[in-house]
Amino acid sequence: MIRLLVDSSADFSKAEIEEKKLLFVPLQVTIEDKNYLDGIDIFTNEFYEKMIATDGFFKTSQPSPQQFLDHFQKAKENNDTLICVLISSALSGTIQSAILAKNIVEYDNIYIVDALTTTVGIRVMIDKAIEMIKEGKEAKEIVTYLEEMRSHIKILAAVDTLEYLCKGGRVSKTTAAIGEMANIKPIVTVSLDGKVDVIGKRLGINKTISYIWSKMEDFKIDKNYPIYSLFTYGTENCEKLEARFEKNGIKASGRLQIGPTIGTHVGPGAFGVCFVEEF
Picture 1 (cartoon, rainbow, N blue to C red):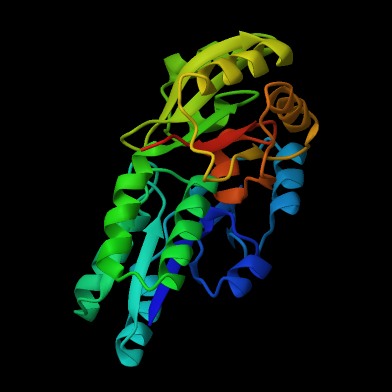
Picture 2 (tube, rainbow, N blue to C red):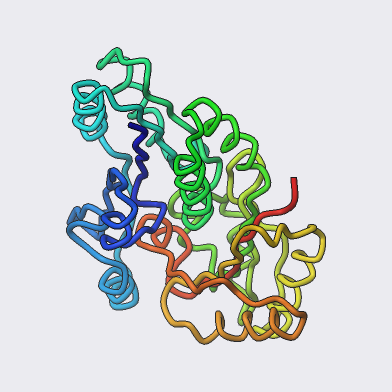
């Protein structure tokens, strides 16, 4: 039997994890001096409310190898094949913990895929893997497809500030400085090597949305995959982005909330889009 494992950056709800029969490993979120397991001890809206209410320090920590080892040993005992699709190695050390656990358990039927993306990008990969499992595809074929697909998943997002990305070491202080001007919205993407890159900045929400749309037009969007609008906390800007989609003949497949693992780094005012280009 082929099983799929994700970390909490994929932003599946507890109900979705149960419905899709996924295995789940949470990252740790630290708020000031208190540690929480994302999706277990703290949930999305509660997290953003804490973020808004305090100027304290927020950070994330990768899972321990033991968290993966528990799943890997059970897969070995059950003779299951396990495909792990994990947050970009450029954003977290999560994949290193998984590799250490695999080396300990010494079981070949564990595949560890560096998604080179995060949040809804991983969701798109997992949903494709579920489809391929139902079609009777073998694990190696699924992994090969996912490793090809990952470079064609595009995330474009606007953030209120680069402060959180800077604190987490994801962008430099120099880059972060551009986001501190009044009403300037930095626009970020996940690059082909899985890093967060600032690709532009615009004054005001309307120009920001126009810029995101213009960047989308650079790609030939594959309509066989969903187009998701994304938000962290508050949907107003997300709704405006969806209206721009509809004006140009595209309807969002769904509106999805970015959870604490990634929200720690982009803050409560982020919104954007995830889609797949043709390949």
